[in-house]
Length: 141
Image 1: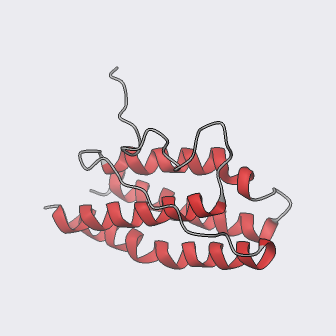
Image 2: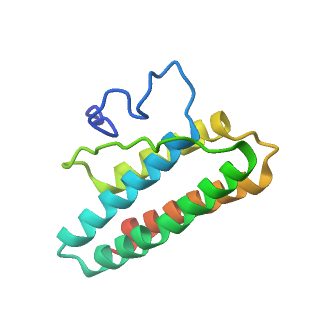
């Protein structure tokens, strides 16, 4: 099996060295990137099912990102500038979203304690949004 392409072109995909932990601003930047990638696919697919699945994804993600950011900042104070990232434009969307789900799973406790259940629940909603989209892309298109 071939080697997978990196999630984004930057060799440090979260905008910081891998030895450091993910920050809340990096997480929000990851969500912004997913929104932009999905919107680009939405505009360029010949498949109606992919068109509709990506539309629902990119339209729902900003509200979820905003809910997370506001709750996190309500608990911790301002997070600072959102980390802006770029994606490999030739990357398969399903792989891209699966990789982001994996990164969220690995990083979520680096910027939010497990005991902060209100914020963790928002992260769960975000992951659910990704998984629902992955189901539609894999099995309905």
